[in-house]
Image 1 (cartoon, rainbow, N blue to C red):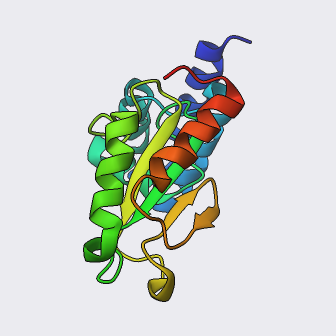
Image 2: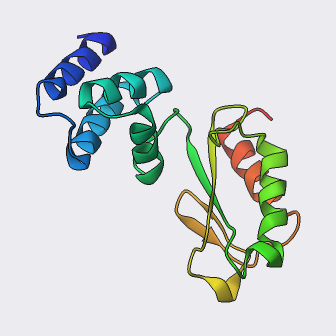
Image 3: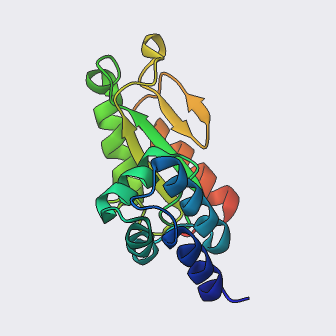
Amino acid sequence: MTEEQGIGDILNEYGKRERPLPQEELVAMLRELQEVLGCIPQGVREKAAEAGGVKTTTVDAIVRLYPSLKQAPYRHRITVCQGRSCGPGGGNALRQEVEQVLRPDRDGISADGQFLVRSVACMKKCGTGPNLEIDGEVFSAVRPGDGERIIREIMKKEGIQQ
């Protein structure tokens, strides 16, 4: 079965159900689509919204809300804390440093497609900020230059071109 057939089968199955689909079923459909494609690109999100009887913005919000759902086939997820302690204490500068290295688009996907860059309001680690999380590993008390160094180490280790 081709990817297109797999996607069509999933969309048809969920499209037959009562509409609009409840959030749990939308998430289940999106997870199935991601299993086929490895991610849920914009065109597929639009088709999923149509099949689920919801707006595309609803599907986009669900994809952003669930860390297990990916809008692009990136390999690494980077989260920068922008909370009350972290943001003014270096988190804002850290975010700029990360963005300068990775040049993410408006969806947070790096120019090379390998990283997703996100900010959160608080990581609940205020005493150790500024905090940076990469693929679930938290780096605390990150100083200027540390974010760039950590990212470049990952890129070098994995042979990702800069």
